[in-house]
Length: 183
Image (cartoon, rainbow, N blue to C red; front, side, top):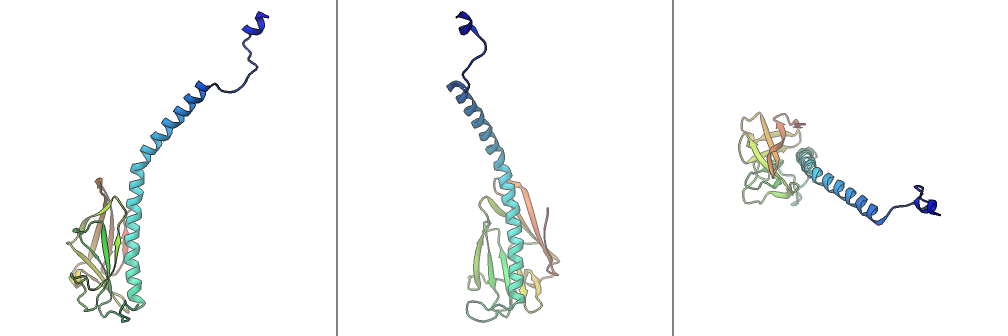
């Protein structure tokens, strides 16, 4: 009889409540650690998505000009379509229809088509060669005008993570209309 109580072989299988709580605690700690490690990577992915979205929106503006799309007034804008960036509004940029052929967006907003927001936590950080930036495409070619037709060979638009401005992506467009993003 004593052998039955002192036997090292237990007939019952399963986990005790203490073992289950310890297992849940370990899994919880591992999940919390992985979520904390994921957050910075998530911001880097948001930065990359934002850079690609801006490049895509520039391409959309070019296609609007090439297709001679009519604006809200039912007319094809004589100055084409453009996109406008300004550090004063670091979380958005504007698509516009150049109705007066100035190759620049009117500051009163009368030519604006749509304001597009950059993803949360991502901002415009540097516009080169100067701020603000106007990129205009005139149909039917489309001809590309950077900074209103000034002798600018390329424009660089730098976006950054707001919490860590050292992490950036650069969207470049040259006077031939080639759009690229750094990897």
